[in-house]
Length: 162
Image 1 (cartoon, helix red, strand yellow):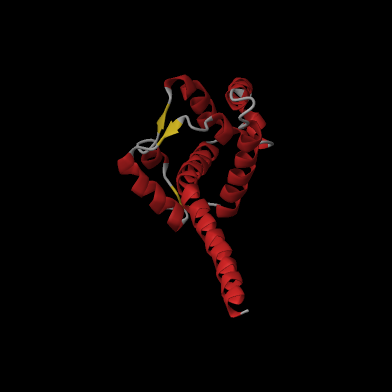
Image 2 (cartoon, rainbow, N blue to C red; image 1 turned 90 degrees about the horizontal axis):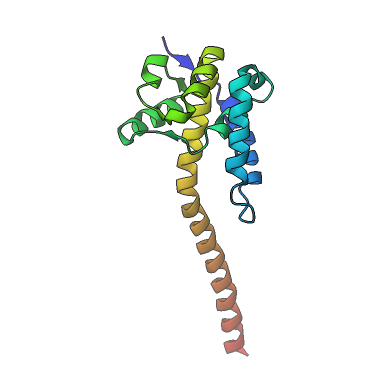
């Protein structure tokens, strides 16, 4: 039996995690995010129950540390599109964790399999949205260039009339 994803919770987790990630992703202090995630991992490993009050810390702690094999990305996209929470047996075969993160992953799994799965969905979304962001920014720039050229066109046209 398939279990539905709580998409509003996923969106909230994603927004909160991304906001934190971006606040530590500062070019002036390039290692700030790595230090923060290292601290979070240590704290969560000692007490995974903290995730009850700050569930977004798990996707932050595992940010850029979870891999989705190319052949599994289609399955992940399907789960997200259809709003399906994967079963544990399906989930564990479609995601790869760093060896150094396995103690945290196992501690979280013992605390809440659902939160671990939701956090990986958030990471999947962040990884795939980050790949598409330049395209949307490029489109926005193209739109701005078009508007600028359009204004230039009308200015030039008006000058020719006078």
